[in-house]
Structures are given as structure tokens and as C-alpha cells.
Length: 459
Ligand code: IFM
Image (cartoon, protein in one colour):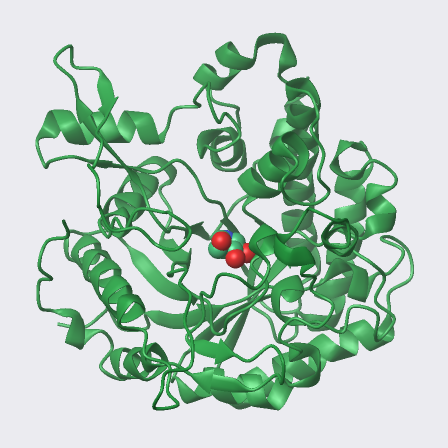
């Protein structure tokens, strides 16, 4: 049996990771331009200056996406391309690039799903304190309006923020992503509150100004847990842990971000944990953040294993030496695509869309001139099999976006890790479809019917 009718088969990318053309078309620097040019911040000093050069290769890239038979492409808009001063005047050249990209996708039958913020804040706004500035939600609303006014005659699926857990956690708390700050917990939580308000304002702007009925979602990531067994106590332990705000790694959780967006309040356990560090949040703030959403987008790559210990309390289960891992050292845990959608739908009561999932590897051109990536094919087979199982068990999953259509700038890892279905020769810009590209095309063509066979267990 294949995926349900209308299931969206997609691929994903993000502006800074693929576009390049950092100083072209009136684009101003983003926080990632400044961060990547700072010695020691990104692997071997790589930057997104050129990246995949997608800014200049619309036809070729759209050809690759359409050639897969994909029905959706998740792309992001670069704020500094559209509004180089962060606020105020929009940049015609920047908007016309997205015009052309979107028209090319639609002409080939691919629906663009647009993320408004995938981490490339204009650097000039960071110089005014970025998300710490109480004006930041209004800046984001202004930028959203410019994009919506121009593109909403063709765009119907929108994401506000991609992975606030990461751009706030790694960017403002740990300092390993742009803008590279190590703020206090109180400051990070204030910036988070502003980012959540930005989400709310942005959703309001889309609803008020879009020229077509819009579907709005988010794209968080979080500390997902899979139960070590199907025993009800283990499942309950995994569910409880998935929705806990942890003391260690406190920025990496679902509920501090998604509960305000979808339930209208911060989670109680987080409020207890953060105490006086929690932001002052008026009722009006919470109403702004809590906007109607149409689907729950979520990026899922892995999960931790949890069981119920002898005292019934959740306990992390170690997998043991030699357990399969990706090049990012993320454990391969296919049932993350079963438990993730299931737990998240139970809590947030929205249809789920998998907005990212994929494998980091170190592919190269093999002696026969091809790129053989059996690991990626196996990884995706296993994960999609579990997604299918979730659907069979009644979870309403509407789509799946593989990360990523092509190898690209992997943030602090630079170009060292490759997530693509298409291999990028960064010296020449040549794109070479990997084996996984051809495999994914046949999965899409069969609407997932090829995934029926149960994979051998991992060990
Ligand atoms: O490349 C990133 C993407 O930008 C956000 N989600 C995770 C991916 C892999 O690390």
C-alpha cells in the first residue's frame, strides 16, 4: 500500500545554504556572512559566499527537483536579499529572484513551501541586538508583509521560523552558530519570547494580506524520545521525556516553543525550571503568539531511547558500542519517524508534515564516475517505512520533505558533511545525481509502495 492520496513528496533546502551570490543583487550581509568570515567559527573557514550557486542556476536546480517527480519544494527566503536594511524599503532585485524561482517551480508542477526565517537575519539588525531587541517582532512582520504582498498570489504554504531551538540555542546560548553569542539564560529566554512574538505577528500578516487561502505551519526540532519497547510504561516514559523541558540542554525542547504557539502558554515545568529568568509575558503577548496553525511541520533526524526504570521514572537507554550513526554522530533511529509524528499529533492536534529528514555522509565520486550512497538509501528506506507505519496506525501525516535536494553549506560544518540526493562539485558547480536521487524518484513514482518490506533490525 502506498502513501495516502495527495501525500506531498518533497525535498528541502534553505537560502544561505544553497544560494551563494552573497554580495549580488543588492543583498546585504547576514549574520551568517559575518559569522562564517570570523576565523575559527566554521570548518576550514568555509562560507556561503558561493555555496551551490543556486542564485544563478534556477533552471538547472528546478529541473533536478522536478525530475524527481517531487510535488513540493521547501525553500527559504533570505531576509537580507529582500530587505537589505532589515526594515523599510524592499529590494526589487531580491524579490524578483524569488519570483523567477517560484514561477519556474510552478511551471514544472512543484508546489513551493516557503520558510520566512531559516537563520539569515540581516547583520544590520543583529547590530541592533537582533532578537533581543523588543522591536524585532515588528521587523519580522514588516519583512513578512513585503514577501507576502509579492509572492502570496502563488504561495499557499508558509513556515514562519525554522528550528528556533537551534538559532536561539546554538546562536545565542552556545555561540557555535551565528551570531555566535553566549548570552545569559534570562537573555536567551527574552530573545526567544521576541522570536515567538515574531512568529505570531508574521502569521497574522500572512492571514491578513495573503492573496490566496494560506496554510501556515512551523518547523521546530526537539529532544524526541523513542520508547525502548512497545510496553505501555516505556511508551509513556518516552512521551513524558519528549515533552519535558530539560535542565541540561534546556534550549533543545519542543514545548517551550510549541506550547505558546499552539496552546497559548509556556509549559509549567519550564516556568518552574527557569523561575525569574522566564520572560514577562502579558496576556496580549500570549494571544499574539497563539495563532491558528494549519499543520505541524517538524524536522526529525534521530531520537534518544528511553524506558521506564524500576521506579517507573523515565531513563535514558544506552545503545551500546558500535550502534549505527551518521557522519554527524546522530544515531540512526528510524522509529523517530513513527513516535515523533504520533506524540506530536497527540499533543498539538494538527496534521503533521515532516519538513526535514535525511542523512549526513561523506560521499565522493566513485571510480566508475557515479556517486553510490547505499547508506542514504538504507537510511531513508528505514525512516519512510516507519512513517508509513505511523500513517497505518492513524497518524495524519500529509507530507515528507527529504533534506536535502543537494549537498550544501552545513552551517558550522561548512561543506564537510553532505546531506544531498545530488552531489555538489564545489569547485565547478557541477551537480551529479547520486544513487539515492534515482532511488527517491522511484519511491515517489510508486507513491511509497516500494517501502512495504520490513527492514532487518539495526544493531
Ligand atoms: O542543514 C540543517 C538545516 O538547515 C536545519 N535542520 C537540520 C539540517 C541538518 O543539520
